[in-house]
Amino acid sequence: MRITFCCTDTAAEPWLQGLRAALPNAEVTLWSAGAPVADYAVVWAPPQQFFDEQSQLKAVFNIGAGVDALLKLQLPPNAQIVRLDDAGMSVQMAEYVCHAVIRHFREFDAYEADTRQGKWSFRKPRARADFPVGIMGLGVLGARVARALGTFEFSVKGWSRSPKTVDGVQCFSGAQGFQDFLAASRVLVCLLPLTADTRDIMNRDTLSQLQPGGYVINVARGAHLVDEDLLALLDSGHLAGATLDVFRTEPLPADHPFWQHPSITVTPHTSARTLRSESIAQIAGKIAALQRGEPVAGVVEAGRGY
Ligand SMILES: NC(=O)c1ccc[n+]([C@@H]2O[C@H](COP(=O)([O-])OP(=O)(O)OC[C@H]3O[C@@H](n4cnc5c(N)ncnc54)[C@H](OP(=O)(O)O)[C@@H]3O)[C@@H](O)[C@H]2O)c1
Image (tube, rainbow, N blue to C red; front, side):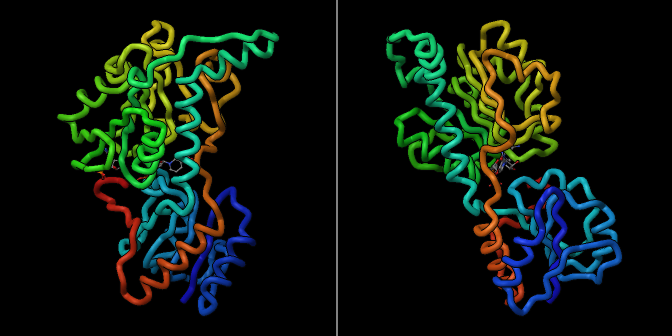
């Protein structure tokens, strides 16, 4: 069995060593143009030439959860795409989102500004019930974030494509549930995959339907958010702020207004990083399962885009 590795912006050697150790019977090599065809590929942002040459792939393992970039390429007809299925990302995402929600709800930025000036200030406690948190996307990451927020006793709402039941979460689904979901939320967390249906989903119309003083946390993809609509609603006062980890162009261009906006916190796409050993263990386990003819989790349905 041959495995080819083609990951842009990734140090290859530790991955190759890890995959060889986990699958001692496999021949694991770094792809270069003209390399022999392989059975399986481990990829991140490969060039189209990679798939043009690797025509016999049975499965393509993406070392991230989002496959929007991969689906823009032409893959070999029989290759299934398998995304990372948690692999240590959901706990990081729960940390990130809980931190952002609590930092906003407890006004920690305002306290920090005061204490930096030597001011011993108190603010009237805000009511938790006034900060319902709505999570768009109740998949691997969204459901984990919902559970984590529940432990802090926030009122948690969730929205997905198909109807779902998640303990402690008021669940909405589909187009018919979207407006009720937005109206029930003050803090909005985006954990959707980027598809034709979800591109630009956070826009002037939808964000206006959040409760007044709304707060946006985007940890999915930059193209879910219409940047200028967010800025307009912050200026109008309908929204109170945003924490953004993902952007339409990454790195975020130096002259982008998000950098300097007083109500926006920017982080450099770091909310849930790919963890190498967890990911190698998961991919190796799935390759072994596929070799035995068993089904694996995390297979992307090309038609729905995630
Ligand atoms: N910032 C980062 O560092 C980072 C890291 C990892 C992942 N991500 C992003 O997070 C995304 C989510 O990851 P995941 O592993 O949780 O994905 P997932 O398990 O596939 O879950 C996706 C969720 O979104 C819902 N959904 C999809 N299309 C929808 C639509 N049109 N309307 C309503 N709901 C819709 C799905 O509904 P159903 O349950 O009905 O299918 C599902 O609940 C990834 O695609 C990636 O872009 C970002």
